[in-house]
Image 1 (cartoon, helix red, strand yellow):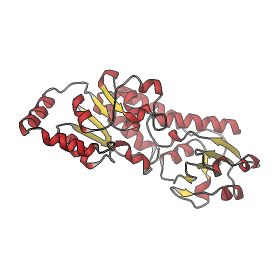
Image 2 (tube, one colour):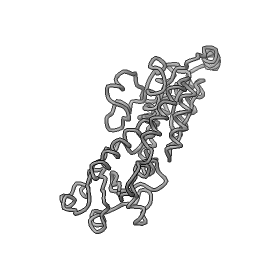
Image 3 (tube, helix red, strand yellow):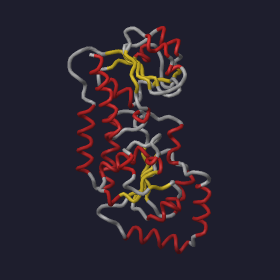
Image 4 (cartoon, one colour):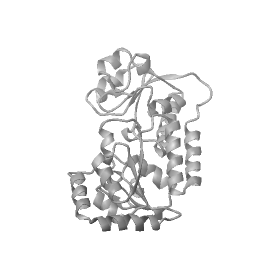
Length: 288
């Protein structure tokens, strides 16, 4: 759910794909390139076909578009370490490695990609006459809702998008009764999220107060095991498996509930917000 540097590479074509795309594009004659774009424009559908190059967009797309509109998802959605959709759902769709050749062969009406797509890949796709729509990393629930609505508008799935938005709003409505509980989210690498992040807002909406913010920490600040032990929160949400995050001393904390949190819930908006909020609500219920 956060805009982490390693996650920005989801749309980069693997192993020299950008160079391969340029070679492929150069091998096409100008007549063929122009004709392909013209035929593509003439073949406009009321329900456009889509290829997605980003796992976060994959998760929104499968909720909003009709299955026969989805020509391919990103290959990341077949990898449990990076997927934001259930494995059985990913198996229902073709995938692409993100190369211009693969995408062009599918002849989609629209390609969905992250704003961090490699410029060479974007240029190759657009040079082949494909319409590419790029999306940034949402920093808030509202940002994510705008993305869902945009995907709905692009795919003709406005009703499905509205239903997903309603579910997101319901999942992130602030609980009634009781004061805020101090919580530290300890992410992979023993870092914490900043206040201007999507996951921080989801935690706040579910009645948790940021312990790391109260300590003066900001986005991606490192927190040692010693610091956690010296000034622990009421809830320690562990989303990593480093030596400090798995240390047996954590089990000896008095007055602190130590809970686990799946890292894949940190990076995307859309339906991932609902899953993250459900886990957070479960934790809140367990500590009452």
